[in-house]
Structures are given as structure tokens and as C-alpha cells.
Image (cartoon, rainbow, N blue to C red; front, side):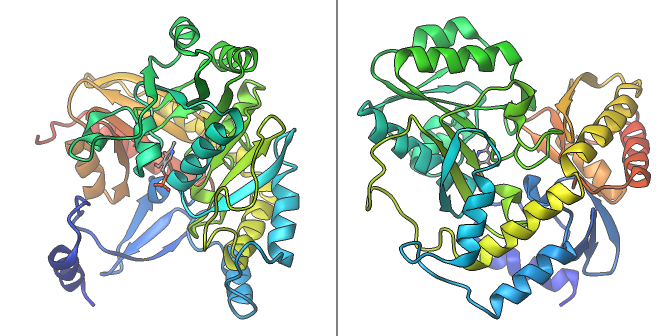
Length: 391
Ligand SMILES: Cc1ncc(COP(=O)(O)O)c(C=O)c1O
């Protein structure tokens, strides 16, 4: 199929909920994507933060192929070698989080964590943060702040409130003896790339413990090396009761998980579940992905490459840049004007970037991106942020 055919079929039959780009990609490797005409693009989106290991990592591809010929599906009531190995591995990643629930996406991991918090505490209320994004199913959407995602589908789940992020006083006021959980991102991603301050996360931990609420940290976007550590909570030393992960967990296959601490109670058979959750195919992929993350030291690579790129971006003198923020290879460039024309201008230079809201240009490249590719990205950013782009 050529590009025209692909775009035509997708535009005719799409549900309509995606703003389709005029590009069709058919192959990927490392930080490169190839369109249907054979043109190479530099992917600085990683499929919204999924491809931390790069596209088509050979070790993940081999693990998937081998497991696909062995056993693809098995409901979690029946134990399995790959799932057991993954459980053993994942529960070594964060001290004290020694149980795990498997699901299939980020929003499902948040949904599970919210249910676990209500089940565990017998309380109903949840304190979330302004600008926070946690997914699009009803529970996760209730924790998500931006009206854009909520309009037209309300009423949502009762009991949710939103407080300003990085504001300890507001959090202190909001947590009551009806609060089941506080949920927040370690770095707000969709909301505009705002890292949590260390003392804020520490205060959230202390307040939750003191008042009998659980702390849920959503690391769906920040997990698995993205911010220069395996998990972004390591920058503060805070350990939540429930840690939500997904995106790059299985090297690109759909998988989510909740890591669960000792304070979480009442998780009994039937309280929650998932048909596909923890199937042997995704578990084999995740085992391979975690091995690659560790052996290739992807968190270390993200820290070094992120610092390198950040320095280059900060050196760009541009009248349209308001602020540059980020941690590791999760970088936001806040502009004084709308970001979409700049995303388009980068696309014309064969670089795929993301927006976060109306004015933030977001970069989430694969952690395996090369220094040569980072230089190319920085050069293109310098050009684009200093050219007049069409609104
Ligand atoms: C922090 C955070 N939580 C949850 C989600 C939802 O993940 P999914 O799209 O896999 O449901 C996202 C997606 O971008 C996210 O960034």
C-alpha cells in the first residue's frame, strides 16, 4: 500500500477520536521510523513514550517470536514460568513493593490502583492534581484534570478533587479522614512536563502515612529509565504504596502493571482481574525489555543524553521560548505561542515530536537515540525556533 492509500483508508474508517497526521510509518529501528515511501524520520516521540528501547529491539523481537511459538495466552489463575519470572524480577525494582497486578495499559493500571485504594482503606475519596493526566477510562479520567478530556462524558466517578501540583499546603488541606488515596505523577507529562519537587513528594508521602491514605504514584510515562533512573521516584527516595507503570514495560507490547506495597490490604480473589493481564507473551517481552534496560544501562544513558540535549536546547537563543524543563530524556520546551506549527515544522525536517497542551513542545526520544541524532535534533530545533512558522 502506498501512503495515499493508507491515509485514505484510515481517514474513511477511523473512529474519529484521533487527529491523523499526513504520514504513514511502516517500519522502525532504534530511534528511526520509515514512512511508506522509504523516507527515514527521527522519532522523538517513542509512540508517546513507549519505545524507550527503540523500535524493533532485536532481543525483544526474539523473545516475542519464541514465546509466540510456545504459549501466548493463559489466564492468571494458572501460574506460568514467564509470569513467575517477571513477578520475581519486577518486585525487586522498588524496595517494599513486593506484589504486582498485571493489566494491559496505563489507564488500566490507574484504574486498578484506585480500586485497590478504596478496597484497602474502606474510604472513597481521591485527591489528584491540577494538570495531572492519568488516562481516559472513567476512574483514571476522574483523576485527570483537564476539562478537554472530560467534556461530554460526565458525570464521572464521585469523590475526586484536584489540588495545585507542587503545593504542599494545598495537599495538606485536601487530605481528610475520607481520603482513600492521593494520586500524582512524578513528572507531569501530558500536563506540560513539570517535574515534582523533592520536598513535595516527600511531604505527600508523610501526609498520606500520617492520615491513613495511600500514595499512588503514576509512572506510566516516567518509568523504565525515561528520567535517568529506573523510576522517577528514585530522584526523591519516596516509595509509594501503589506504583502504576505501563508504556515501555514490555518493549512496545501493550502491558500495564501496579506494584503494590505492604500497606495495601483486602486484595482477595475476584476483587479485580483482567483476561489478558500477565499473559505469557507480554511477560516474555517484558522480561527481555527489563534485561535490555539493565544491561544497556538505559537509565544512565537517559541521564547523560538528557543532560547533553538539555544543554544544547538551553543554548538556543529564541524569542519564542518561555522555559525549558525536564528530567533525563523527558523534555518540555514551553513556547510563548501555539506549539502545533513548530511540531509541523519539525515534521517537515523529518523529526517527530509531540506537544503537551497548547504551548509545550515535548521530546520523548527512545533512550537509545545516538549523539549524532541528538545533534541533528538540536540543530533542527535551533532552526525551527528561530524561523517564522505559519499558525
Ligand atoms: C502519566 C500517565 N498515566 C496514564 C496514562 C494512560 O496510559 P494509556 O494511554 O496506556 O491508557 C498516560 C498516557 O499518556 C500517562 O502519561
